[in-house]
Length: 443
Image (cartoon, rainbow, N blue to C red; front, side, top):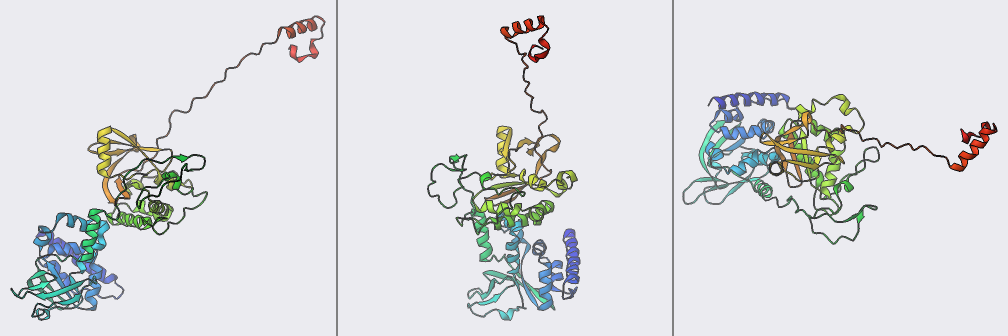
């Protein structure tokens, strides 16, 4: 109860902050239905509203018209809800699904008991999420239903700008259920099965034989380094096409998705800023994913990025080189990397910064990258995993290990040339007659 009271105060303060910052200049009354929602026993719903960043949206809705909130009780959200579905809603990348779910419980007008139809025929209303809510009455029991959820506490909270009705369970729109099923099955973004690399002619960088027709979703024939754009000093990275040449993957959308996930996750704003503003790497990564390549990004957090000195970033192209060393051209998750280092002890992963590799080993129950003082631990695992792009948070910035031993210099043995016997005899004769001064060969 003490924690709920603290959240209530915090929610009330945020409501006033949003109201003062709104363009209309309207403020939320202390007698508002939004404040009453926090003071009620529907604490689980109010916490979800705060996590979904819907405070300003609801404040603007209350300023325009009355609202009706169909609130599931705490037990329905805490115990009866599928744990996997609840985990899906709370993931930062699924923020839109959570917002759609919550706004589907709110109508932009006041609904009373007299609005329920007396017979079994339903009456449909449009919610704030544009999803329809159907009000019906069970002919046998006489219970009032809200999209098949039984009304348990009518007029649980009633205020001048709205009303709250308690219902027995959560209402899940079809669009949210479809997004959950797609994420769970990974049917549209599943990772491709690994296949052997084809033979490529190193002179032309093309296949030696015409490649047979590939199935949709097959990995690219050429290595990822052949598909990368030239460096920034030669030409900029080309913009990605709509879903790649085969129209199988929308890499640009997936890159935007994982960058938004980094921002919502918190603590990785510097990495997102480098990808979007300081370099064209986001465009380059989108093009690679559209072509069918997979990537694993080791993202340093803001605390690690703050330790970078100026001399590390002052050289032209240094931000690109730093990020390239943190991108692995494989699809790896926290589980796959940890299993690899547990089994083999030390693993070296290729990076997009040729020819450097990043070493990984098991340390303190986690995965440790790099060497010595320049190492970093896997700090936030699986920030984003969609079958094509995997983002793993680390607590340090990695740099290639410098070669400490210079290449040995090749010493060429000096051989003293030996003159021929005939030349020596001639020189002796010239020396005897005192005529050797004009012949440099004799000296």
